[in-house]
Length: 148
Ligand SMILES: [Zn+2]
Image 1: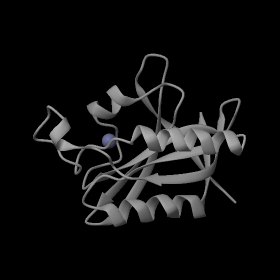
Image 2 (image 1 turned 120 degrees about the vertical axis):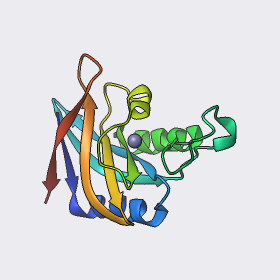
Image 3 (image 1 turned 180 degrees about the vertical axis):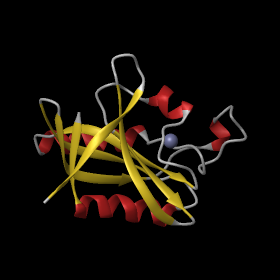
């Protein structure tokens, strides 16, 4: 799979990741899928709805966990339908951690979506890598193309 994204869209993601640092940011990507190519059409930054109190993992906070409010996903689905698009992926940041999926990211993932991860080191974006699950449920790096 490949994912095509414009610089402007990438900037929206990077700004969201830096402004929420040191917490993880997250958001939804709307776009089109043709064959094995995904194209991002709209970036929807969302609030990180991870709530420590509702979790049994009390040592974890928004610095290392994210969750997207089901209401935000519902609104994104509605917007996608209006624009004749679909949800093609979910992005989130890793504050002071590399752009590689965690065990937790693996358990939250579905095969059809792209999962760009933004590594933010000392408040600045250092890299973005997009991941997809293969047929064995293992994350593989997805080729990212910058769309002009
Ligand atoms: Zn993660």
